[in-house]
Amino acid sequence: MKHLLNSLYITTQGTYLAREGETVVVRREKETKLQIPIHTLSGILCFGQVSCSPPLMGLCGARNVTLAFFSEQGRFLARVYGPVSGNVLLRKEQYRRSENEENSSEIARSVVIAKIANCRTVLLRAAREHADHEASEALSLASAALSKHLQVLSSQLPLDSVRGIEGDAARQYFNVFDHLISSQKNAFRFTERTRRPPMDPINALLSFVYTLLVHDVSSALEGVGLDPAVGFLHRDRPGRPSLALDLMEEFRPMLADRVVLTLINRMQIQGKQFEISETGAVTMSDEARKEVLMAWQKKKQEVIIHPFIGEKIAVGLIPHVQALLLARFLRGDLDAYPPFRWR
Image 1 (cartoon, helix red, strand yellow):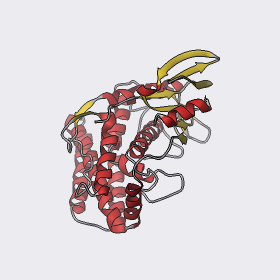
Image 2 (cartoon, rainbow, N blue to C red):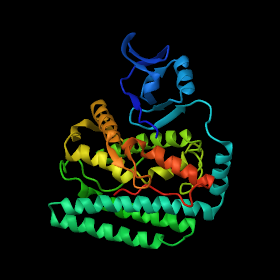
Image 3 (spheres, rainbow, N blue to C red):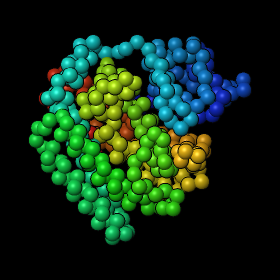
Image 4 (tube, one colour):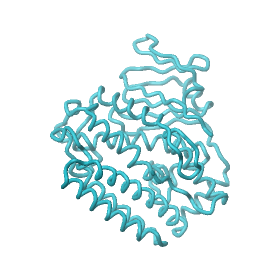
């Protein structure tokens, strides 16, 4: 089983990363702030004005440590990685199945079933625990609607139908998302999902955490030899990691969404840590961003029993396990792809 290594997040502006032997050196204003052995890291994520030496880029590539760059608010910019790993025959099989609508629908349907089931679990747990009867009833009704979608998905469907169900289920889930927020309602009120740019603090948090999740899933796919850009549910588009977006659908509710909700409901993040620009776009402060990154790392350290392999693993390893299971399915070692369903 793969070990969960650390991710190094660099958010301080003006930071410079360099190589010393087999270590990563973090400097600011020519002063060394941190020195970390490269073998303890799975990835380095740089936000904003952070620069990196070419020798360190080479070391990261040689040691299979992903080096990724983002804007201050979490928009993905670029990623540096070494030689492509994995068997070329596996990628060719991935490409063949992606071009076949029936094969794409089979994998997409499994992913969407897991996503909807995991969304339903989030809503049912909240409905049982909610003190407000009206909110609890709304959550229960939404979970019942998601159950109907799962019944429809129990049969083989065309790919467009699977996408339509996924979109409708996402709307129903986000229609009641505001009921999942139990504190700081004045500062954190959710009305709809907005992305580029996020128009309220909750959407700013969701977009930031989703970006972190896409990075982790992309790294997991590359680690088993799959191409993150060629998906089944999400179609090919230049610059878009379609397969990573496919796989992350399974983890959004229980991993990304719950991190955001916990930060708000436990008041670890507050409304004053966000700013609204003249265009209406909402951005996070440095303090808020660091709080989110700490919560994200802590969440990834939690241990669960994986429902398919039956072993205890860290939450942060779920993308790696699912990437491996998908690769085994494409190779013919499994009869079907077993998506991650949260218990």
